[in-house]
Image 1 (cartoon, one colour):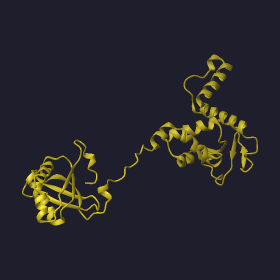
Image 2: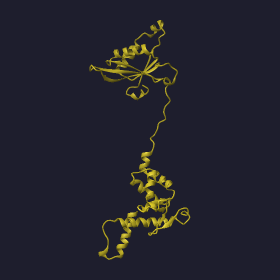
Image 3: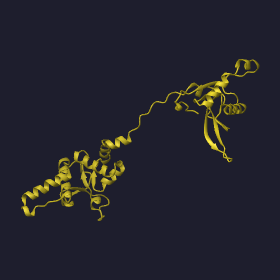
Length: 276
C-alpha cells in the first residue's frame, strides 16, 4: 500500500513537470516515507475525533501527524521512539502495518512485536490489536496448533489387578552385547506388569534351550509367574511349545504348581508390547 501510494505521488508530480525534469527509476527512501506519513495522517483524521486522545499528551509535528509525549522525551538520539506516532487499533491500515512488522520479525510473538512497533508508533490497545493480527496469521496458526490427541485406552486387567511381584511379566531380549573375550551375549528382560520391576538374565545364544535355562533361573529367584507376555520370537515360541508339552496335571498332583499362561502379540505388531 505504501509503495502504491508513493508511485501515485510520483506520477502526480511528473504530470505537473516538464518531460526533462520528470523523475524515473525506482522509488527512493524519501518518497516511501512521504507516502507512509500521508497514509498515517489519513488514518488519524478518520479515527481521532478528540475523545480518544484526551488522556495522552499529544501534539502535531511539522508533517501534521499526531505524536505522543512520554517520559523519555528528553532523548534526542531517538526522535521516533521519544515521540511515537499516535495510531488507533481498529483500522485496516493498522492491521496491515502490524502484520507487515510481524512477517518482518519472522513471525515474532506478541511481546516482541509490540516492542518493535513501540519504537515508531503508539497504538491504542496495542496488545489486543497485536493478538488479533497474530491469530489471523496462517503460518503461526499452523505451527502453534496442537496435534490431534487420541484418548488413551484403559489399562488391561493384568496391569491393574492385585498380584504379587512378577506374577504377570513381559519378556523380551535385547542385544547383542560383547564381552571382553569377544563373545556375544543377549539380555533377557523380565518386566513386571503391575509393579514395573525388572529382572535381567544373560544368555549366550538365541536358542530355545538357552532361553528355557534363563526362565528357570528367573523362576528360582522370583517365583513362578502366572502369565507371560512376549512377541513372536522363534525362541519364545519354542519355549511356549516346550511348556505346552509338560504334563501340568501330573505335576499338580504332587505339588501346588499352576500352569504358566503364555500370551503372544499379534504377528508384525511390536507396538502391542508396550509395558515390557
